[in-house]
Length: 396
Image 1 (spheres, rainbow, N blue to C red):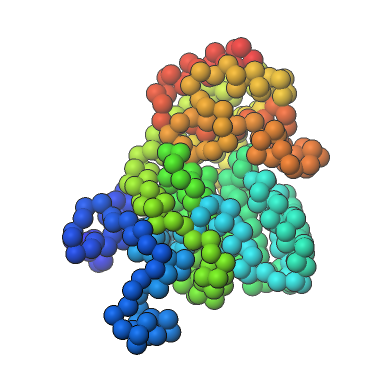
Image 2 (image 1 turned 90 degrees about the vertical axis):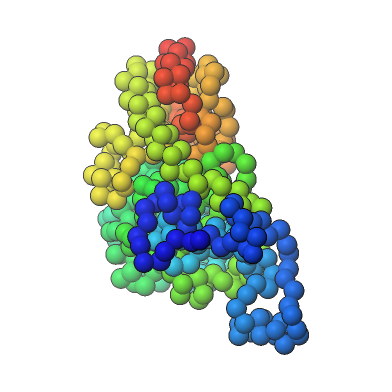
């Protein structure tokens, strides 16, 4: 039994039942097709399978039944036509960019982004003759000035890692489409529950499925979602020949994560809102950024394009690195680690970890000071977290 196609099911139902294809055994939980290849009844069928006359699977580097179910569920959530699951979030970022650009093209990217994303754009692309402009993406006028007739691709994260900076998706997409540029949006922090970039005008949306989708510290993964035409014309051959495919076992783990994602993210976001309020009021704190607070510098855009807050809080302590380290070391519940979107609360000091290799002057431009901390709020009891954070702030 599968969902009827003539009904519009809500998100939680789609995440559990959507896209499911059962084998002849009628299993309840999706099967794991842990195979590298597929057999054919005849040589003629093999020929037809390879030339596309016979629909079916050829090789798990190209497509796999378990991966396909995961891709279909994600398409339902993001309201996308097609998706391809890949081995990590950075495989998604690199693949979506590299499959499109060539020497002579121009790429514009918002400067507030994960360190590895910046490496792909700032270091790898110029090696192959691609011109790059990295701008302050918080202001639409900067996009207006940077986009030119040769601009092929736009890339941004919103909310951005780690400063939770916001990009106006609809306005930037309008500017990009005026010169036929493709808009690639990393939506990992917002999740498909709280923001839908494709509906706002973006052409491609990316997720590190390692984060909220698995959300339980088990597997690396990523996914690229777009129109059927964009996948076919730009990404499919890149995907087929460069081999970033997700493992079928990982896809199965991601499917299990999707079943509880809405419950996890909603509770984690509720806790994050309370924690942000506590942190913002403490004397040791220089500033606190949270997409659900009215004092976020881009609260007006958040209201327009996000339907919820976030599991993430960013804040800066007055005492710099020493204060930040003291705070981290005083916590008894959150883990000091560099993942996010996990059921476990995780504290990260970006300047010495995720953005360590970004030049100090660039970190300063981005607002990644030595006192900045990125806090991913988990599923622990909210009051326990509040008490622990309060004592750690007092110790700082």
